[in-house]
Image (cartoon, rainbow, N blue to C red; front, top):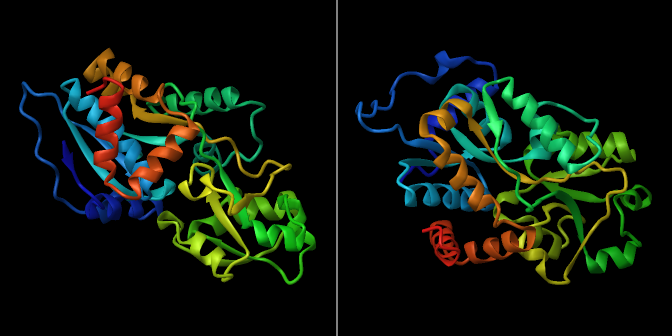
Amino acid sequence: MQRHPGLVRTLACAMALALSLGPAACGGGDEPAPKPDEPAPVKIGTKDFSESITLGELYGQALEAKGVPVELQESVGPTEVTNAALREGLLDMYPEYIGTLLAEVDRIAARPASSRDAYLLAKRLEERRDFTLLEPARLSNEGALAVTRAYGRRKDVSSIADLKGVKPTPRLGAAPEFSGRFEGVEGLRKRYGLTLKVKDVNTNKGLQYPELDDGKIDVASVYTTDRQLAGDRYTLLSDPEGVFAKQHVAPLISKKVLEAHGPKLAATLNAVTALLTTPIMRELNAKAAKRTSRQVADEFLRLHNLK
């Protein structure tokens, strides 16, 4: 499997598109066409954090084990950039979180009544664009806010709503894109009336946790499959107003690519997805902190007879 970690050209093109600079900003350098008797590789992208990279490896290695050629383009960027790369044809698929797709790509703030309704809505919207979602995983990696247990006890905070009465104003550590998202500053303001002091933190590398430990921030943007949450050091704040949606994972893929490769492509991807749960993903994330995502995916697929 060809791997392109941090593919500069893909990232630059997708960012240009996301910023409405147009495809002319991307320049030349087209990939060579496959030979007529060879299927084109499936171009799988990942977002720029470890879990997405591991998911990309799982899907890519499983396809290769079935004889499907794959190009894995790791760490393309955040949702907005990775999705723009898919729309432009720089990617054929990537693992997506359904709630993020609706909130950040389709800008739908009114949440469907259930996770299944959210999936069906997202699938309908994608199929209007010649893409589709394959089967969703039981894995749901929601955004959330967390505090240390000590801070929660000291300030009597167990819910996001409790933050409104805290003095001094809590300092929130989050990725830069958090400030522009509904599942972020916008939603916290609209649903809870919260205006927090936001500090940019590289959450992709888990740096919000040492910042919490050192008292440099009071609240952190986290994800529920973060390996650090396996212990009892941190408290996840409840979200009664539903700023953070359920985030079941599903492959977002071009319908043209599905048709070109036949039913084997979808069947293989769905077989991987069927194995993924939130506890399993937290375990895989913990392993990926000590080994490469490639190694973690290989071990998991062999364990489940998918390689």
